[in-house]
Image (cartoon, rainbow, N blue to C red; front, side):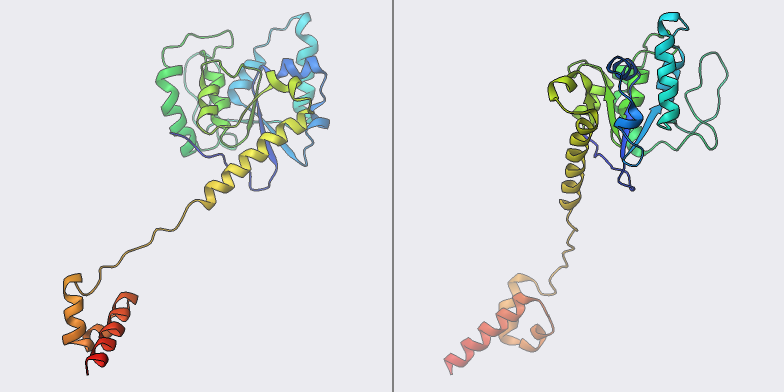
Length: 256
């Protein structure tokens, strides 16, 4: 089981942010608009991450973080991705997007959710954001087959992100960022380059299927046909019959 990473047709590097990345960027005082310029990068958050971000408490201690998030979303023109659907009744935030907002769920996304639903999503408790446990991570993980998913989660933590990383998704764990001694731009570029190389190799490894046509003469009768009715065998254009005709003709010449 596995899915192939697909890069953007405009060659920009797509990046999807996990909700826990906001604290990382804020603590590092990273200006994301400068670090990931829009002429090279396109940044997204999922609708589920948007819900988690809106659920950050309105406390004095969180005011600076919330201001940073709002200014970064505006400065980087960060887009919210969501699956197309119609609003449902009941309490809680809507996960789907309507017309001109949501997009059709891809086959890769559908297959990924089918693979993780029972293991990580069904029967999970609700969190403070009113999403269930793993729901936000699942949305980010599903995007890792089309963009670089940034997260502060540990690589060995069981969940949708780890599952995606093991099955073709491009999940970039920021816990190893300081050890890399790279800029965030270089850190993302490195994984994206590997992802594109893998996509190119997978594309080149696909060979056209050769169609085999049954030979007009059964193998057991080809030798006899070559001697008794060479005119029939000449109608067959296969290399095998041409070789058989030449050898038969040579043999007849030598026996004269």
